[in-house]
Length: 301
Ligand code: NAP
Ligand code: GDP
Image (cartoon, rainbow, N blue to C red; front, side, top):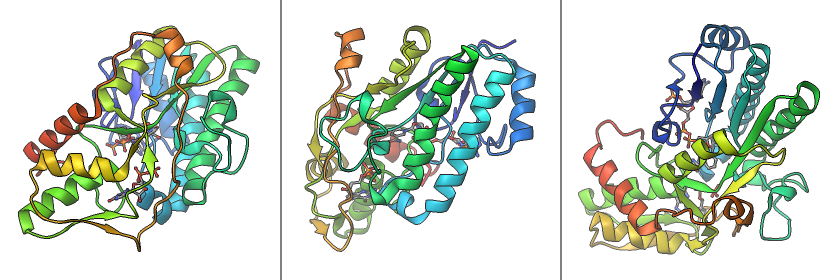
């Protein structure tokens, strides 16, 4: 019997987690019920960190709505049901601040997940993810299992998906700025640069997830956030600095801005961990840029 398995173990978050047996899509396609159950029967884990998902930034969410819905709803349904069948005691699953309603009073808190429609750009991903919360709570009520969810804001770090079309804003901009420097072209940022986001470094999410596995047992999820907002334009300037790009930064207003902001309230997290030290964004971006430059050939892009 293995203590803990980590789905999505090769991903941005999974690769930063320092516990458990790390699994990737090469070990099992979690969309497939029979192979998922059979893997869980082989490992019979006590705990599961479920970080596998079909993930993307604004572009990915807009281009692959059907796949993002199907892949996520199947993976989540199968992982929680297989966990229950083989007697897993604790599951920590990942929601995201993207799943919250678009039209909602800020800041976002754990109580507001289901209060309205998500933003039109990512509603299939958001609804599929929201069902993780429903399934975890239903299983807790009917079967008495300790299945919880955590809600990180926009995550970035080494081993991210640096795809220009489908990645999140930080990895996409790092890749674009790297190419702009190499090819002597403009560095093009989508939209106005004015939208605000809260970013969290992947290693901070990993440490908080390991903490939640041991210590967080409430029925409601918990938000993992610095609660510090920064504009996309400011992030782009930091990337310019760490890449050492000397050319022109331009904003392409033909491209979407997405949601203007989605500030979240981290008071529940701080009530448990008042002294938690988040990696400052400039330090996190510097490390991510260095990782990408050093690992350009093998980086996911
Ligand atoms: P990621 O880097 O894209 O990694 C995804 C992981 O899921 C990979 O290990 C991948 O395996 C695995 N996977 C994908 N499809 C699979 C399948 N059909 N069967 C088995 N495994 C599969 O994702 P991440 O950014 O680390 O995200 C981790 C979790 O945090 C996700 O649940 C995500 O929704 C959530 N989250 C992410 C963000 C963010 O900004 N990135 C923000 C909030 C919440 P392969 O390597 O083999 O493809
Ligand atoms: P979101 O936080 O779920 O909206 O996802 P993203 O991480 O993709 O961030 C999207 C925000 O960054 C939007 O305001 C975009 O207009 C802006 N942005 C600027 N340039 C880029 C880019 O190259 N890629 C992505 N994904 N977003 C960009």
